[in-house]
Length: 209
Image (tube, rainbow, N blue to C red):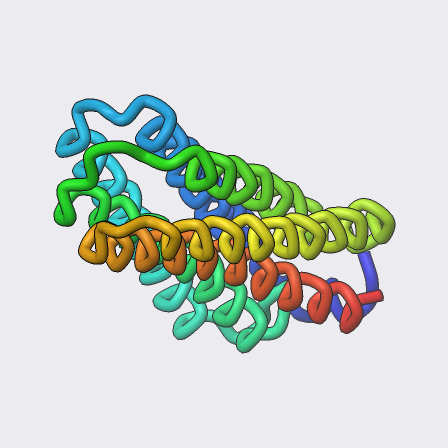
């Protein structure tokens, strides 16, 4: 323990709170993949996604409240708040995509959309690992590698989305094009937010390395 930590004890439970939030995000991605791969009981699965999103909102609220009551934190207040917000963004876009699958009465999920959600799940797993590595700032290689992988996955997600959306315009059902295009865009935004979370994690690591 360093002199600063001995004089001013830091609130280490913030790591646990962020890890719990990252677990909720991962649960959301797993549920979303189940929805698109097994496209049945859509209402029930959409409702489950909403419940998970509500849990995520509560986690952000708890972190915000704790920050308002805590003077010394293991990570800068603004960085803690920013990371919690980015994690929440991932979940928000996933939930909004699932809601549109239900509300737009999508009949079948295109193969490219399943591929994109698989990429999204892989990305949220990397985010989850990176968040949990923040407990130990000495794990430089692990944190960097997770962030690099998130960036790689985000690029793959972009390609899948661009190809899929271009393919939609080769069909003649204009209404279906609009519906699916919007869902693809929300899923792509979710992968983008994974990269945003990785950027915050990298900034935190640089400050503490």
